[in-house]
Length: 207
Image 1 (cartoon, helix red, strand yellow):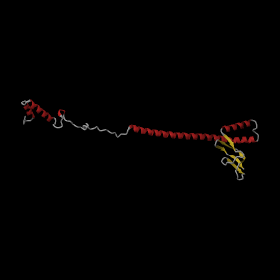
Image 2 (cartoon, helix red, strand yellow):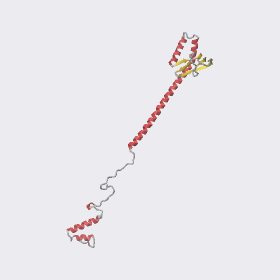
Image 3 (cartoon, helix red, strand yellow):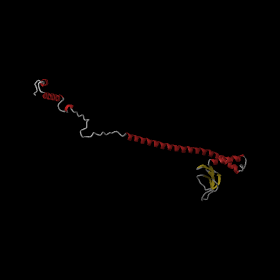
Image 4 (cartoon, helix red, strand yellow):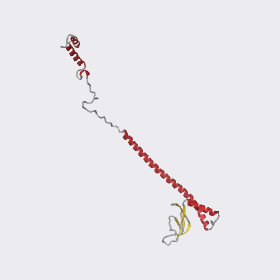
């Protein structure tokens, strides 16, 4: 079958006079021409590759993430907070120990100050005892109570005749030593200590 000069419409008109095979072939050719020719796949139309389908026989690409692992970041934050908490706890413990020491030292200093003031009364009682005024009567009872009070606070007297001389706790008002090992002679005033704290030095004559 030959094409007519008048174009497709004329060809269609000519199909009426042809046989069935020629008509079917002409329709197929025309349909291919209307479908764009190349790039077609039978009756399914053109196949377009938009890059989304994987190549035949290939593997799909593995996506990799550049973002940090949330668990690792969370663990790092937890470690940092734990270190901060440990540091604050240590600082608070040191502060509490320091405050305890300062409070204890303040209490001891206040108590030592009060007891030191009472030593003047104790000196008067010692002089009264030396004159025999504490043998009996209410003054003796008062002296006994004062002695018991000092003992309950850990106060003890020191400085007896014959003790080795120690310039740290003995105040020498006269030195009669011959250059050897000095010892205490006459004790003019007793010394007192409370624990390791010296409340008052002893006033002595060294010989």
